[in-house]
Amino acid sequence: MSELTYCKISLKKITTKTSKPGYNNSELKNLFGSTKIKPDLLFSRSEFFQQTKTKVQGMSISGVQQKLSLKVNNRHELEATTEGGEYILKPSPEAYPFAAENEHVAMLIHRVVGIETALCGLVDFKGGEKAYITKRFDKLPDGSKQHQEDLLQCFDLPSKDKYSKTYEEAGILLNEVTSGKQAVTLEFVRRVIMAYVIGNDDMHLKNISVQKMPNNKAIYYDKLTPSYDNLIVEALSSTQKSKIGFLALGLLHDKEDGDEEFSASYDYFGYYTGVDFIELAKRLGLKEKPVRKFITKLATDVKKIIDLVNQSFMPTEMKSIAKEVIESRIKALQNMDYVE
Ligand SMILES: Nc1ncnc2c1ncn2[C@@H]1O[C@H](COP(=O)(O)OP(=O)(O)OP(=O)(O)O)[C@@H](O)[C@H]1O
Ligand SMILES: [Mg+2]
Image (cartoon, rainbow, N blue to C red):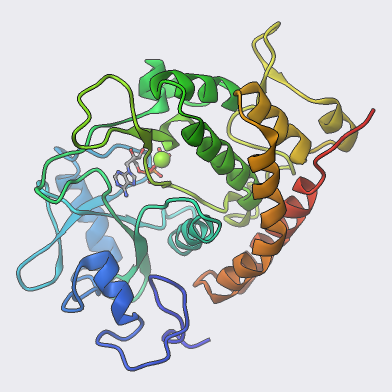
């Protein structure tokens, strides 16, 4: 595949002459606000790691992976900044080659199934390697910050406890902090299903956040933030295989022992099926129908998802693993009824 065949933002085919090789004009506008942008970074990957040492202090985004806050300067270049950052740049960590390409397609997969997703794309370091770039969704057009909090903060727990709850408990808390908005809970269940679909076993409490609309002065949150930090973890490295059915948090909560509760269906199959996610939805006070509908639609969306994987910038081997995981999990999900 030629580098220039698919857009480094949308992964759609590039058919016309564009102002920047490798990018569709409309996508440049969407992500960077203008086609004047020079998306190629002016620093190399190793210079990035030098810069992050000095720039990382004073940056308001935390997380495990090294990243850099960027803004577009008046020469239309992407420049590192400690203040007024509009974008976050994440290269692939040393231990996980092609994590950037993997995260990029994982995000687009979420968008293709109808999940609101942070705007993102790939940009080239000087020297060629790609980095993942995302536009900050917590910055308002006037530069002020939109109020948001991750579920770990909502639980008032320290970082080390980011895996300490089940999705059921997280959903109940989400209900509380949004004052029981069913649409938000349904969106949450959809995202948990998608973590399973793509084999993302790292959707912990810091990777789910809630947001207030700019004029909301009340204590309740309005919605989930756009989805972020999605990875096809299973395809990342051959040494870190997760077994089918593995998620960052337990799915259902066992009230007796406080641990994860497995359904009779899980005990039978040995992995999650649609039954388990419908049970999660019911426990969170949702109707079954919209969840069934979402799962059923995945069976037709699978073609679009596989196309995205094929058109992605991941290496061939990573693509094959990703396709295998996604196809088998969507198939498992179609099993929505279990009779003992
Ligand atoms: N597009 C975005 N806009 C605003 N905030 C974001 C965006 N993407 C990520 N964040 C925030 O930055 C934090 C770190 O980003 P991210 O989760 O992608 O990095 P990470 O280092 O991979 O995290 P982890 O700790 O899960 O490994 C997130 O928890 C989230 O609060
Ligand atoms: Mg994260």
